Image 1 (tube, helix red, strand yellow):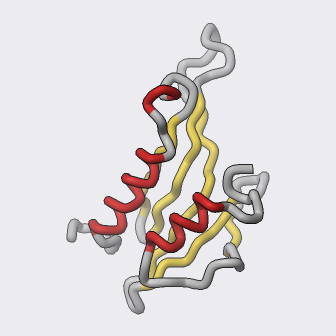
Image 2 (cartoon, rainbow, N blue to C red; image 1 turned 30 degrees about the vertical axis):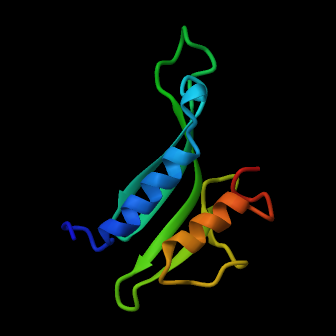
Length: 115
């Protein structure tokens, strides 16, 4: 484990999830990335600037956040509202298996993550 309270295996699982949702044939139009801060991993959908002449930064829209509780080794899934405020996703219980929550994001039965 690194200096982060998040297990390396979880970070690797999220990296694989992002790679799987960032097809190389669409790399110029879409990327799925993640960031780690404290005990949370945030997943972003990234798009190029709509006006290449004015902006050079890709936009980053938060898709989901996985929060880790090191006390019981459980992950809780959150979604972002239109104001980028985080709310617990109630259709998935906290779990020790981050892959279960990644599958829920991928499946997205409520269309709350991918729209």
